[in-house]
Figure 1 (cartoon, rainbow over the protein chains, first blue to last red):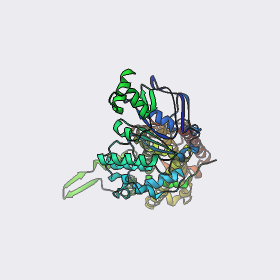
Figure 2 (figure 1 turned 180 degrees about the vertical axis):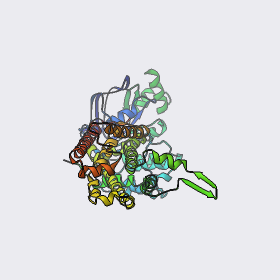
Figure 3 (figure 1 turned 90 degrees about the vertical axis):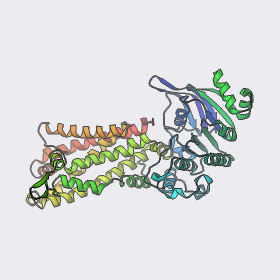
Length: 236
Length: 246
């Protein structure tokens, strides 16, 4: 069973075509979703999570329609939203417990031991958090219930250099096992360290997909992902 | 069939309790005359300030139930439109078992807040009418007040949930709620036979409802209840089948 299988998925907002016939599947591993702004990455993620319906085509998450059969897959998903936001009148721990209750899973206190949330800020009200702390809370809530599919949309946003290092270590730690992790980001140096596969999107289409080593070997002149990405975008 | 998650209701209710309900109640009590503020504030002998604010506001719409309607409108806009606008709802939609569970949680929490308001208003009316003749004329009028007010609460919640579900901006949601509320209230006043202003002036209509013209008033209640159900049903269907985050 594939974690995600998208078949010719398109999405239109009025006359704007956000996704144009995307066909892709995700199995175990870390997938880096890259592309310029407005290339359709976030729209694809939202359709994958059942937050939007495709205009045409079909998408399955663990063999279920994420919009209409959401209840059967919700506990298997962890999601960090781009520009994540949380209710400000509760503490971080209260919010994490709320997520556990929503997903109907036991609240695992082990998530509080990850370096990315150390410092005791989770016991404070979210209204007192800095942007970086909110991002850290967002990352840790995506891991509640040990989900099989983790979707991280711009996970490095607002993180300081140490936070980025902790994020990479965190993903390296959780990627072992039967997990599918989808990371959408513009920071290619981070992806080089954690990704198994790369998917490049432009104007709502997938223009390249391969495993990281092959992708870099095929397109890069200096052995870096950034160079390979630039070459792909030039040729697209 | 009904996907009832008590924890979810508790969470939504907790959110709504951040609103300054006691302060809103006290302010509404002042402006509807239950608590009396002087129109003229005397600073010293022969020197006084005319309280424009109190006189202007007192002359417009500040009956308790209008305050209640606006407050619940803001609350509905917060837990639907604002959460959608801010992105808080995205995560809840991804993690919740069903959209019905989320909808029921929010609706029930709003209803509980409405009930709190209801008891507050009853208390205020008791205090208010200790000085007047309305309560003395008929003890049963207080009991007869309950049904119209409960229908009114359901009406306000349904209307506001409907508007805040289809709107993705909190400002638009609040303004639309207030405008629709005001328009419907005025339309009722001009209907034939004239029922008075159902949403506007609860004490007289509730008195007449069960003591003087029961058929007409009961009809008004049934119509208001049916309209409420329609608003709720459309909001529910939209939220569970068509609602997409932007």
